Image (cartoon, rainbow, N blue to C red; front, side):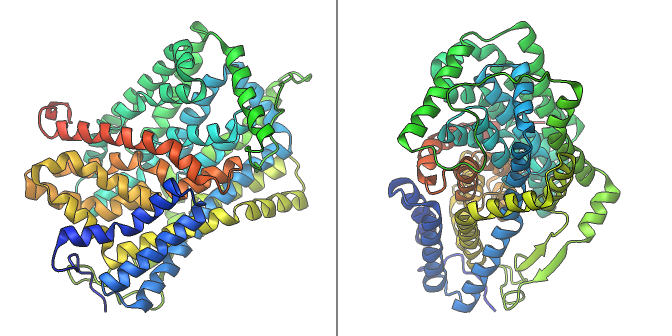
Length: 561
């Protein structure tokens, strides 16, 4: 039996927290400063986490090793499984030639690549986050941007930044539902609070996307459309989370944002579209010429020119081009929203008490830890649902079984280092969680009294950065946030919501998400470069969330539901 000691070093929470931070510092330093490849950075962090668990927290070596195996298994399934199936589904659309039609459909909405980036990464990505989550939006929209002409690095950074505001309500509101289950606070109330925080991020994300694609000139030329999409998405998220449905918030907001782009573009055409496209394609040409473009998991569009297809876009061709994405929306909507199907899928989940670990780790309160039970969601996981969609798409597109199998095998090979990265990072997270390191850090931050309101989003940011999941961040810290709020005389719902909101801006720097983005656009091994480009966006948005939550605990309390 092992019970974590939250103050293992001289009874000092500060010293213990400093040591507990070493695994995270190892990952960030090796990835951001030393520019190691992500799988090496993840493995280095894992080694340090094991050393801290055994030497500082007195966790038995056997239990620490078993925590590694459980975390690694969770990293491979369901996380890597989701990404494999998402990229395979996309590969099928490219092999069949239907993606060319999809690109022309997007062009018919707007031929401006900056607006296309907003529609794909923010609008469609938000819809995928609403339905699937767990890296699927980054994987799919990353290769979509690559195929319409974006350089790999720019595509990766754009999709990581876009995958922020929708995260809180992702996978049909799972992060918020998790927080509600753990704290006993009505999840509708938590969702409403989150809906009064994340819209302030969503409001500006389309403008940030335009800035990343074409700088200040791009913002000056496209701001009416980008701002309109951001405003409508933010308002829809606010209204849905507060009065309609927490589960459907991202679906409503994403569809409203896409519809807004279509409507506004009929009256307000961005200027400089052709020049912007040429600059974006030249940037990709430069990457190809310098050998920095990587090897993408799809056949990219022509580098220098894009010619119109001779065949007209008939209704049948439009429907076939949109079919995979309409199918994904339909399948996930049924799986997540229709109670009989949801119940059936949940009934197929298999709870696996991890051998040698389950029952041997206790919480600080002395009860058996539930984190030692591995849930094998073989049918209900988004990855398997995407696999089913892929099989149907292959049949409809008449991709032969051998060709589809070869594409799947090729995807597996290309994901091998990403799988190692994700497995190592999740193993690190499990060791830190089950040894007590994560809770030590959270307890130390929570000891700041009333000022904790300004710091509480940091816990969500930290938890999501480590695990790659806002749901996991809430599983780690929601109860801690609630307890700290009660002790400090702060509204507990506010801080539980802040944990969720802080997590949305931590996802872009998670090694897990960096590995997924790098794999999607063919930049495996260059995750450190992506990290250095997104870390400042993450920290800047975190600062904004911290300030907002701190003010909502006092002078802006009137804006809470």
